[in-house]
Image 1 (cartoon, rainbow, N blue to C red):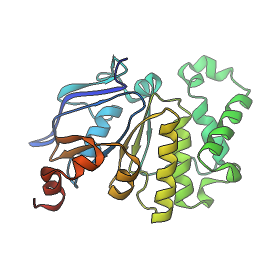
Image 2 (tube, rainbow, N blue to C red; image 1 turned 90 degrees about the vertical axis):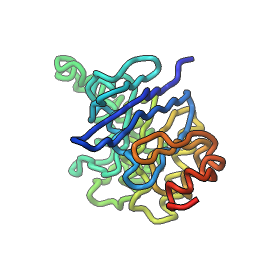
Image 3 (cartoon, rainbow, N blue to C red; image 1 turned 45 degrees about the vertical axis):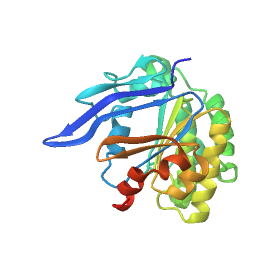
Image 4 (cartoon, helix red, strand yellow; image 1 turned 180 degrees about the vertical axis):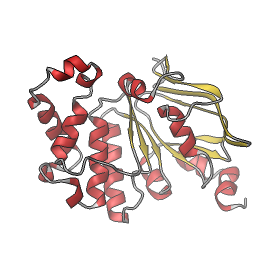
Length: 248
């Protein structure tokens, strides 16, 4: 089987600054990988390369053997890539159910003529209801996002990403802004989604939760691939400790 994700020798420069320097990562289907590194490591830039927001100066990105490098973000989504963003921006005047149902209809919106003829939303709403149950929001499906706390909105963002039926789910700091109890609960959900067969790449600063749920970590520092492998073994390597603490 082809790897679900291949990042091959990606380099990104902003002016005279190299944000990502010849970085490579390979993910197999069913992997749950924590993507970590100190501030300024270039994690967000590499994630934006994977999603198509930033085009690399060198290198390529592949999803299950398909070269995504020249594709726009919406084309990558239709190819099987989904991103749950750190800053959650739902449609705040629509209910949670309506937010997720809209994402469930992504296949219809690919063709404007098909979209105009699609009046029946019952199938999308049924799927949305199940996805909200899956992320633990079954009791607030009719609530508006503006009336819910951040922990709920983070789960809503995951549900909207799942609505795209991804081959690979990218999570950009989903635990940011949550207290420890909320972070642990959401991390448990991420682990469960992976155990159900979903491939997940998790960018996260909360090392405690990353090491608890992720069998593997990919460490980046100063834009370069630093280490990749078993979580506990990698985080005990002298070069990784030095990158985080500034000492061996």
